[in-house]
Length: 153
Image (cartoon, rainbow, N blue to C red; front, side, top):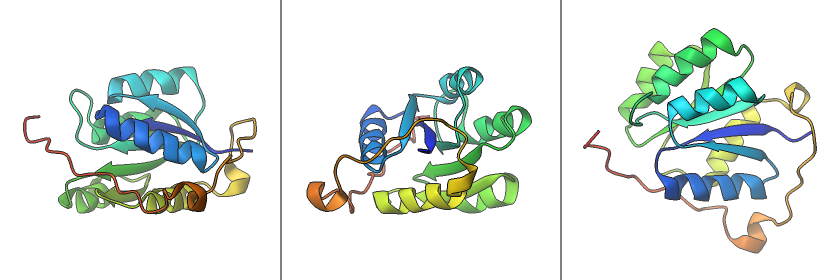
């Protein structure tokens, strides 16, 4: 079975790049542009992992984590952020967070974090998604997600 991921990122370009890369890796990927949309998708569908940015307008990644832990037991969480201080904040304040990745990060680090968060025998989603290409064929293994300025938030 393929791992089903809900990807939450307010930057449309980052969301697209991450979704494509994760689909190439064989994951089933749902997308949300903010925490509120993500929470609604979690109400409607089953996901194995939520990969969420932390700093987003409206419902932040930290707020989303709190809601996930209250309502959706068993969903694993990987947080991504451009703020290096967030790693400590997440580990100090957010039980249930499997990993925190600091942007920019290689896609292969995100893939590793997702696979570590959900052992193969814990995958709840149905269906099978197989990668149609490899990173070697597409040269995507070292794509890094850029740091974007969220100072206006």
